[in-house]
Length: 252
Ligand code: 1GP
Image 1 (cartoon, rainbow, N blue to C red):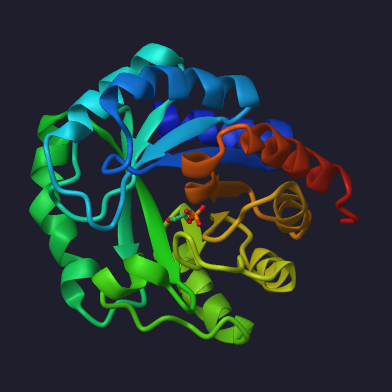
Image 2: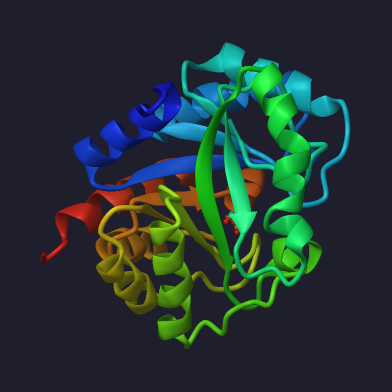
């Protein structure tokens, strides 16, 4: 049976076709600002907030999450870079496996190390396949991934389908935070066509309305943006509008 946050995400996807999730890097977020940021994210029309970063390590995480929880009723989902980025104040955690890492620590090791603490915090764990596409950014480097060339959709599709067959209910194709170009919509479309059970998440390098629109139109079900919010939170509303336009422009 699906638990609360996953059920919420699935029902939002069913309602809107594609949803936006805002990613907050706790390293770059002032806990005093997080309440206000959460309110802005909600007002812009995002459906949830993810908190995490590849290099984060520290106590600020709890305070940032408490602020985010105070500012809106959006679910806060941890996007862990490692076992240090777990907080009992979140609503859920993406229980992610970096499927194309070359180091088993990032595929099953960190997951085993963190499973009992997640249970003791009563955090909802949502299974997620994390597939890193070239260039991969910091996430690719830190998790020792073998980034899949962006022009090889057949290889990305192999991993995505394997994730679905392994029971991972969400598949995240990640180009890397802050990269210059997002995953091309044509590639997103090919991956979406092969998945018939797992939900497709796309992130990395999405900076404007047009890009969000084309990726939603191609069939993404969740679009994640992080870097753009650090620089200009006002653009968030544009991105959410772009997603809605993309869903409405779908031809299938
Ligand atoms: C990173 O895909 C996310 O994990 C977000 O990427 O920071 O480029 O929006 P950006």
